Amino acid sequence: MFCDAQDRLVAAFEAYEGARGFQAAPWQRPGLGSGRVLVLEDGEVFERAGVNTSRVSGSTMPASVVAKAPHLEGAPFTAGGISLILHPRNPYAPSFHANFRFFGVDADTWWFGGVCDMSPSYGFEDDAAHFHRVLRDWCARHRAGDYEAWKQACDAYFTIPHRQEMRGIGGIFFDHLTDPEDGGFERCLALAADGLDSLLPAYLPILDRRAPMPYGERERHWQETRRGRYVEFNLAVDRGTRFGLETGANIEAILVSLPPRARWSFDLRPGPGTAEASLARFLQPRPWTHPAGHDA
Image 1: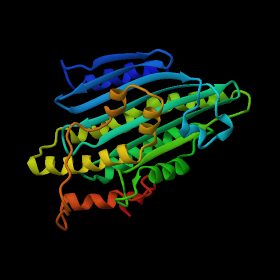
Image 2: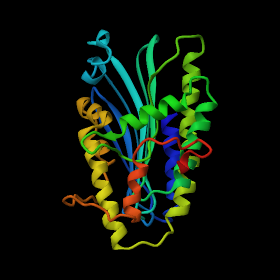
Image 3: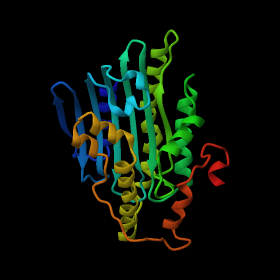
């Protein structure tokens, strides 16, 4: 499932770049596993784009898993997943991130996890509402889907504590999704597969609207400042980065999620009433799928 999704996603993103394509960097670690990094840099639309798959296994459970499930200490495990990150060149086009994963110990102990979130440098009400409505509709198609709970979990997870703001407009976040009933694995697998199929409808209409917009140095400066917050979250907060480092996974694949250019300006405060200042109201939890929620 993950490899097929990687091929579909990369084909869709390459359609925006014409002759420029993704570069493949397969990797393999004896006794650990393998994966395939597909990355595009310095494109016309994407300043950096990465779509990675991996499958790892080990005889010692990672510390981050044991912390939540102490009874699994010392158990062998298998984990696989796909992650993608898009950092468009145009400051009006938001960065986009998604990750779907599977973790298994034995036939009775397994779970799926997933996350999908969007990080704009400039806020647009219609974009946020569209993004969240596609995710809501995906969740509604599955018995185990719970958009409201998963949105709240995403809002909480993608908060930068030392900034007291979200990294972006959130999305959905679920973990340890399992089902012990007959057919439970197939139901969870179907939910994850449908989630992967929902990524392009959630994001590409927004990219189509924003990527052609004109911009200048002011907008690039602000974009790089917001990307600095993206870096802060990934390196200081993100559990996925920590898990990858703990398991000895491919460092380049882990850090490809970082933007190619970022900036930290001292105590930068956008002027009142500017488009840059208005982003702040997008960086707190809001009910985007409610009929009038995105206008609240």
